Length: 161
Figure (tube, rainbow, N blue to C red):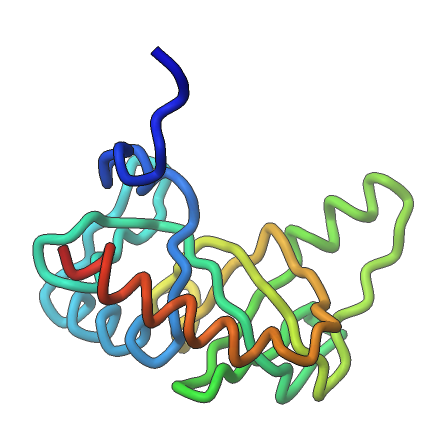
């Protein structure tokens, strides 16, 4: 029978992973959804669908440049050219501490990849936040242009289906 190709996987199967998104469209969609009343998952996460009727996701994958950093609260702001988003990296810092590794938030100007839970503004945070469970510094000088092309293709071929 073999392994199914990516074209054969249903959106419900691919929705389990983090959705690769641009910050601007994510922020606008979350703002719209918060105004309509939030849809929370059983784990307390926030479910987002970028296009009405498309699959929902609770975790997002973003990439961009760190424009500010606050080591005191282990957070930083990432700007991908479409918008800026606060990243709460406390969970990453705790994981590394358990392994006896000190976490240092990325420096301003560095390009990062962040995957985490989408937290809308409201009770626990002032503005849209990503509760990171993975933070990776990316050194490839072509990565930013490739990221925009990759997410544009996803919006056209997957998210708007």
